[in-house]
Image 1 (cartoon, each protein chain N blue to C red):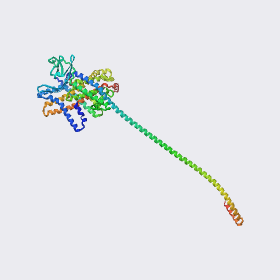
Image 2: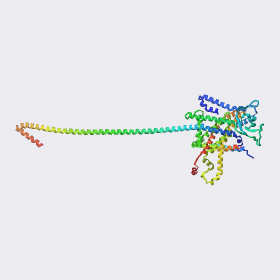
Image 3: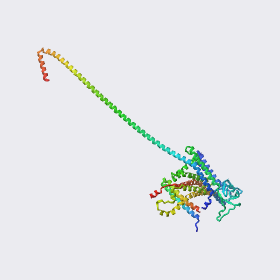
Image 4: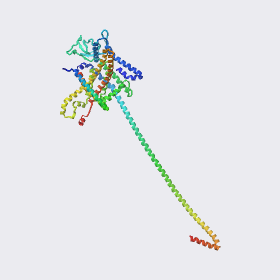
Length: 63
Length: 166
Length: 388
């Protein structure tokens, strides 16, 4: 049985969603713990989120 | 991906690139340059004004410190002058006192000397007068006594008593 | 855009509180009316439900794509004739010589355009060269095999780009001039944008690029931010143009970021890509790792701007699809419960879209600045290696 590409893309997107959610949550915790490092945490968060998001887009547009 | 490539329009891409680059250059020259410069200048101005205010404050403080110093010096000088004056006064008074004392002593000495001479003169005078008087008295007494025998004896006797006492 | 600007300036214009409230309400009402007029008109008629579904789908598809004429809305008369309200735009083709003609010649794809003995057909929003009958030949995947002439037409998107560019130019030139005329204090409409310019400088450019080199990138960052933001906002107006949700536009923007990043890249930047481990390992140890590492790093150079272009495209595209689908639902439900519900949803989503419009512009600028920061970074690898 062949798994449709759509399903694979969906799985990837679920993974990406979980990943970005984790990044966002961790960043929030980090900011709550160290509010003075807000800028640095935000930058690091955006970089990581952007990299993961790229994978999500790749999956979406590979369909 | 296929859908993306199908949607891609070369014409739109070319127009977008051209227009965006044109906009970028125009805005760089006429907008962002002046805006960023003005903002930077303003911030620079504020910074300068703040530092100038700081400098003025420092200068003020320096001035105040100087004033304080001057005041202190002036006070010390006054104190010194006053002290000097007081010393001078004291010295003058002392000198005057000394002088007065000396003068007084001199005067007293002179007076004493004068008194002494006067006294001496008076004593000499007195002595002469007493001698005169005693002679005259003696003349008179003697003249009288010698005429009386009893009295003569009495006299000799008293004189002898006196002499023994002496 | 104009309506939203009015929103922002309403507090400045009116001091009276009642007047303010009333003006806000009327503005909202006007915004809503303008926003929904095209769709009311579009969805009119008594066609059966399945037809309507297909019609809405086609309408959304049509809206998402670029168009050769600036049509505000269209309707069907009682005779079954399609009427379009809008203006035709020039079509510029390069097909053995420059061909320029008005897009009204296509009659919205209903007729062929004949120019200098050549026939062009508008088919699925693309121009194909055809014979006099307008036949389209297909290959086995049902793709047209007809010749596509090079197309440099002034489309709806190009017009919107032009309008945005002019608006930005006059707005920011005005702001730039007001400083000189007003003794260093901003004046006029541009004053509203001064804090945003400062925000981009102080919170995007300087932290990511650094105090020393940020000035070089500022014009691009500012232009790209306002360009994307304005076009995103324009996309939410009744004009309904989906410029930033077009792959060609985002591709052009990301390409510029890519080029600037790599052409201003310092020695350290390239060293980081081709020699990421530095002197921390002997060469024979590095070779094995580098067989894996270097391709990943090189791929990263391309993935970064690619995700940039896809992110903006996908976000704007998705926003428009969701918004228009919800509006379309109103006409599908036709019930007293469903329609207001989807109306409320559409309203909420359109508010979120206003936020997304700003957020996407911010993200694009922020990530561009980040990449520029990587490119212009100069740090001491040797010290690091010795410190460990």
